Amino acid sequence: MNHRSIAIDGPSGAGKSTLAKRLAQELGFLYVDTGAIYRTVGLAGLRQGTDLSDVAQVAAILPQLTITMGYGKDGLQRMYLNGEDVTAAIRQNEVSACASKVALIPVVRDFLMEMQRKAAREHSVIMDGRDIGTVVLPDADLKIYLTAAPEARAKRRYQELLEQGQHTDFDQVLREVIERDRRDTERETAPLKQAEDAVLADTTDLDLEGSFQLLLGLIRDRLGVKEGQE
Ligand code: DC
Image 1: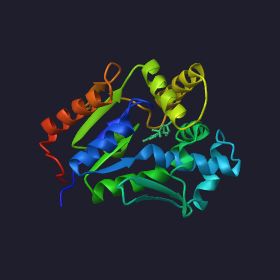
Image 2: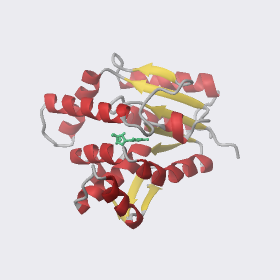
Image 3: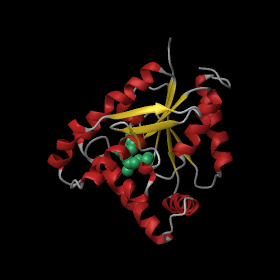
Image 4: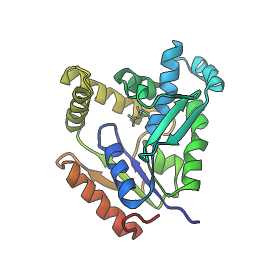
């Protein structure tokens, strides 16, 4: 069967995962959150006390890691680290910075490549990340570069943390967003950038519903897919 793939790349907080999840449900595609995979490596390093700026130390822990991706009854992605369900643990705020650090390392990116491509070979997918359209799925049927101003993204992230009961201050969240953007866009391997053939979608002035309708319209136009069709 010929599967289809939609790549959504962009900086953190642009709404990629929330939108991709809803779009996948609407279209009957599998949602693949590749950030969750990097977060799982980041969590492993954090737990083992690995110096994440030391490439050799990070490379040394990789052979001990079995990272698997599964899907719950609700259709949502779950992450497993050596058999343990770490879906909730990888969402802790401190894991975000760890994920962004391990994502700088080429051996980590290579280590995680095949599991991402395999998902797209076996299913129609909406996959989100930073390098999906540029590196992981260069032949994706549709590439979307989803972005928003840093302040708008920090506001959303701040709200999300509050809802999770994690108290922090807004300026700190904004600094973290800017720092993460810098690391993600300036790294040498697979930096965050818009693929030449990606469609730019800016959600700074759109709410979730507006952003959803924008992307759904784009997908229907380009792929001609209807509701629940794989
Ligand atoms: O999307 P996220 O915040 O869960 O991603 C966590 C980190 O992983 C982020 O700093 C960038 C990195 N990442 C990446 O380098 N490549 C991807 N395809 C996905 C995420």
